[in-house]
Length: 153
Image (cartoon, rainbow, N blue to C red; front, side, top):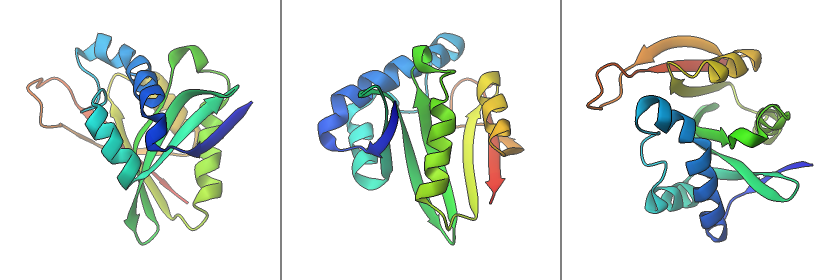
């Protein structure tokens, strides 16, 4: 059974270990994961400042997502992740449906994902997102870039 609930600081250890596991593929592929993905302090700040949700499967935290209200019906998904062994079980689709239900007045959703994350591209496009551009984050790796996605509601 899938459930999604607001994360609290009490969830920090489970969320952090889940995040590290979920982004292992990115770390293996690029040599690094998302900025501060493995930082306890950064994750704690995100839980306290954004709408941070824990994604549960059979009462176990298997993923999470952090949403920021950008105003005027615009929302930014700063992170969404599911541990690899729990992918392809409808959890990501349930998470996106949760966002639609939780934020019924949303007009636009935006997010970024790495250029080689083909499964992410396919998933976001299946969920109605369109690639609108590319950006290079401020990193030493000049070959790395992100795809920018948006979904207009």
